[in-house]
Image 1 (tube, rainbow, N blue to C red):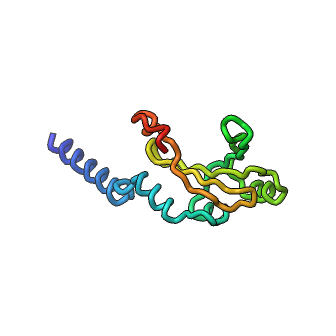
Image 2 (image 1 turned 60 degrees about the vertical axis):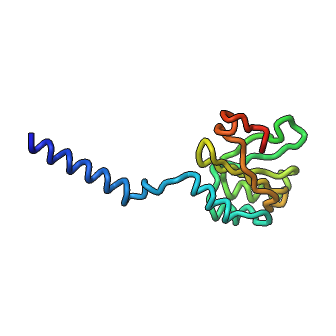
Length: 135
């Protein structure tokens, strides 16, 4: 019985140390989103924004469609560079960064790849609180 108790205490100590010293205790999506937003400003190139944090995908804008977008593509720096140089993004494109159900940021780039706006996206929290149209 004493051995099990000592083993339990040791396991709890190791788990607690891993939590606090392993970086999990300060993993705060809201804080990460705020830091990202502070480092990204309109006027930055898409390469500068991607250097702050690489997106998982980019969305091609299409202002003539109902949704304002065509489709999303996985982020590939070479393909994105080529598409911009060939003028394929008439209405520009977006990077979306989703940190949590309450923190999401969308950056719109014009057809030259320059950020023109950094906006909060409507999140699940907004929908559940009835604030989807107040942004």
